Length: 114
Image (cartoon, rainbow, N blue to C red; front, side, top):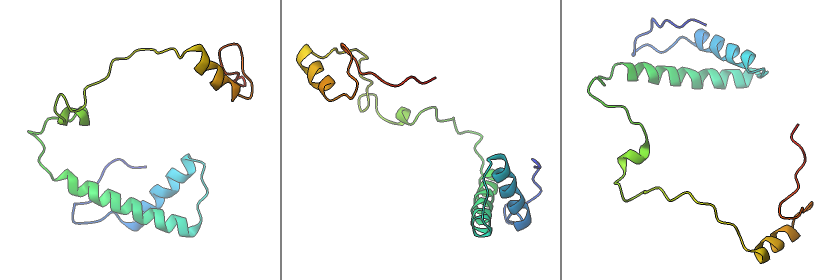
């Protein structure tokens, strides 16, 4: 897969290149694609690459990076809540454990992961 781009923003990536790119991604992902899926994905990837080429011409020299979408909100609109643990009372715990398929003394039994 080549990383250099010789196409201009007004020239879309050739169909053969996007087809080869989709075949390579499918191979690396261990996917088998039908001819119809290959054509569909090639068109979609071609559109994405053409859009990226359009974005490359934008002048973003004075634009600061956005670290978090919450930084766009006012300070009080989305204040983080205090992180604290709340232990339910004994009655609530017994009601919850009554619904469990494998209840333990004060917890749910789950199958081992490994």
